[in-house]
Length: 170
Image: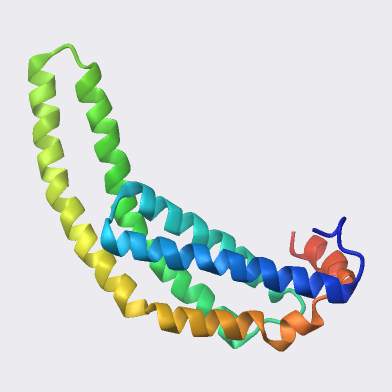
């Protein structure tokens, strides 16, 4: 971004446009998770919130804001809630592969029983995940995102600040 942007005003405009585009992804992925609760939808939501959080972190380089900190905490809670279900999905997928590749009928039956036990854990994690998604609320997240991205921090965002702040943070 810094190589194609020539002025601070242009940087802020590009930053805001990209942030709005990035915000649409968690919003749509959130709806998919609530509708389907599929492994791909959960993964997409986690990735989208991480990318959006990076954008918020960049806006807070010059001076952190309360709305940015609140948004960061809520997104972390959301990813944590999604993480339990995602872990179970990954384990189930590994077990399916082991069952498929196993030559032993006894081993396949043992792995299937483990999968049945994990299926109940997956449904429990889904209930917990949905509860947390609804508790956090899309309106709250949207309001915090708007405050964080339209705050004075973004107005202070400049190429000079980025050149100084990024190496310091790294």
